[in-house]
Image (cartoon, rainbow, N blue to C red; front, top):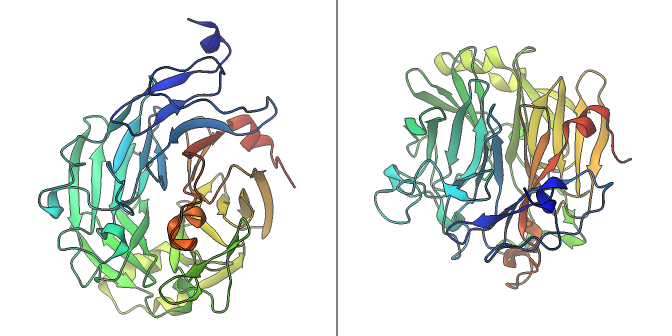
Length: 389
């Protein structure tokens, strides 16, 4: 083992030109095709897990064995792969195979525009395919939820969503799984709605699509890293609907919020699931939980909700019991923290999608100068935080 590995720093190799895995930063350790390591101070709470120089990452998921998965939506011409496993040796392997990641062929049998990945407590990987390349509209057969058995690395189930569930202008975003009753819940971040799916019989239903809780909050201007986000087509402040979602399995609550919004909402899981087969008025079941700020991803862990605070370059956590928020970590490298996930040891993983620096919000010119990244906050820091006030 060389000195860099002994010092906890190693730069991994590159597969298919996607990027390089980095488990730290040793200035002299760089193989052909690898990305130069970052200079990170010893006191920094963020470890670099992976860098993607040319692929915009949004989602991250970690298995019970510590396997790391990331996804890249088809938002630009440079898109080459949809889902990868970031292996310990530095290779970023298309997952579950190259066939699912191909760019041609029937849309129902391959990834089209993957927005998120999620590993449930049974160590099953779920992949949300919004099916809307470059966000121009859902293509036939594109919108789906893909279940992958991590033990066999085989696709175990594919649930397709027709136009009644994923309209042409919808954009399926994130997913959570209720293992107790075998339900999936997905957010639609474009039109605003929650899609619930009975995984046993694949029945599904769109709910709350007329409720204010899934809509962007009116007259809210998002400003990220000094950039006021304006929708270039509508020439008005960017308005993104229901996006982040989190599930409390013990309390039996489903939490969610709009990205362009500061209020967190929740609905009892049992009411959600009963509404699939009845006329339960879910709007009457919606509860306002508290203000958590504009955010992209949510994750429920140890009784608290972890929030990617996109306007603060931070990850925060919110305690529903006390209605108190605290900053876990704030760092200028958290450029649009997008999704969060937890590893088997309690470490927190977070992606940086740099959405505000892309050409869409900068008059057609990219301001992205750094690689897209996955960071890790060690378990000890998560347990003892907050790390910043």
